[in-house]
Length: 638
Ligand code: SRM
Ligand code: SF4
Image 1 (cartoon, rainbow, N blue to C red):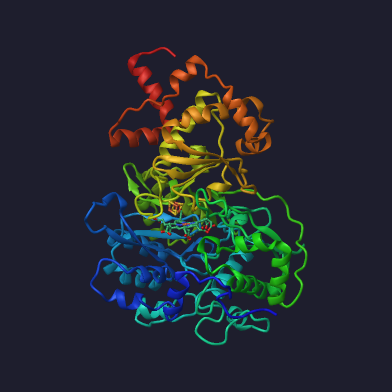
Image 2 (image 1 turned 90 degrees about the vertical axis):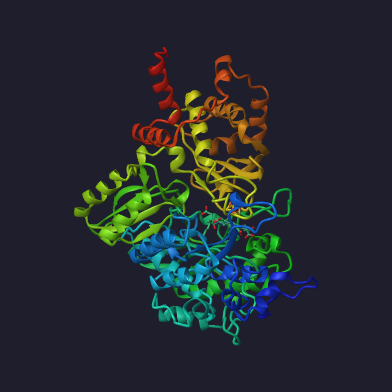
């Protein structure tokens, strides 16, 4: 018999958060009451409920002073299925970031935008402005379905891409919280004008029969306790792994027939990355193939999987509450048969699929209907104006003048699309004037494929730097590769300030995971297309020791790689024992060891920015360029 009343009955006490959710009256309190109070911050209980509305309470950790109140501020995250940001929403976010935020926008690894630095007193105006511009933050955080991902590429002549967008939207709507709390609190009860959901989705939400919904209360799918933990979904197309499908709680892959008509979806479940250092019972896990579902049944199957996790996910220990632990504890067979009980019929076997590739869609492309799209790389997702790089200005001018929609990518970049070819020169002129590189070949390739989470100073969980540290780390890795004769080499580098894994470092070829101040656990062996988990190679690498640590590994790679083999594939093939053995016996050459120190000099900001721009324009590293310039100045021979 399928159960239908969460929380799952167990002899253990439900976690504190289960009580907070239960008392919240479907996400209203204590947020509604505390918002009216003249205070700088919310209480612990309100903070937890505020997350469901898309906001985290943070403080600027750079400004902490012992004995003084923290510099409280709110982060807001958009719910943007498939990364869709209509032009009016982009312009609103841009304006809000200047009016109430820290003057930057942050493109996230799940295709949303974040605003940082909003004071409590401005939170209501900020959320109201977002909703009035066809946006939403509802469900961007909290124990429910998060932003649904889909490949951002707007290929109008590839039906499967259009289906992925359509179903990402529909599934996001299906699992949107139904409580009136959001509109009551932030819009004084006014229902949003944005996105009427399709009748098909509305009907699908109410279908029961197998215990997937509740008949009392405001939340048919979630009930009073919502999910045991966050729940993440992606919809993609065969061969396209731009959304890291194996890291999601649930992934759907569009299956079409020979005419390009949608027939159904392959289903994967049980991926997730968050872990805690030194707690073996927490781990990163890749999703398993569950089977295939016909198009007509897809909403029922999604609800069945959600209901299984809702009713059987661990509500006592939040560190063990994600779907990945349920599937790991039960095994795929038991999980599948429980889902089938909610679903009401057997799940069919998966359909064959081609190999997945990673694509970033940077540069100018045809979208298949005569129009163009342009993928722009954003270093670590931070949209800002700095020195000669005026990305924030460029995007604002382009969206203002040409009214273009945006798709955020899962690698913290943006695509502008629906561009008539005759607008290309004017758009390119704005980008050139603002110092933005649009030819992907001119972008430093390590930077192009790298990601880092925000970490310090906004993230309360950060153990060490990430977004602010990665540019320097990449510079040093490039210099080392150049020195070792691996000039053209590139691979996927991802960094996070703690083991929660927000920039998905466990899927990288070289992953840095904050483990102590200025130190990282290093993960090796992920694949360039994110289809294999990396493994932890060392627990604590101080960033000063980066070159000493990486040099023997890169030398071994250069010496023993197979033709065309990537760094991650090499590490996985030879294994850590071989790498450790090579490292133990490695003797740096005299000339090499002299140079590995990474001597530091300080340059002024304007010189640094000019150096960076010239290096990028010439496709060189800053170290190489500086080296050349200094040698010429000092009239040194090579
Ligand atoms: Fe994340 C918590 C930032 C994607 C796993 N994440 C946080 C918080 C909210 C810190 C907090 O709880 O106080 C971070 C806010 C930092 C800041 O100052 O902005 C934060 N996560 C981010 C973003 C902005 C990183 C980025 O570089 O873009 C991403 C926002 C995505 C979005 O638009 O929704 C982000 N977080 C992820 C991902 C990647 C993904 O979803 O594809 C993961 C790993 C996948 C997964 O969930 O397993 C991820 N974040 C976590 C976890 C660990 C969850 C777990 O199961 O253990 C936490 C902590 C928690 O939930 O307790 C966390
Ligand atoms: Fe914060 Fe850790 Fe996520 Fe980085 S990985 S944003 S430090 S929670």
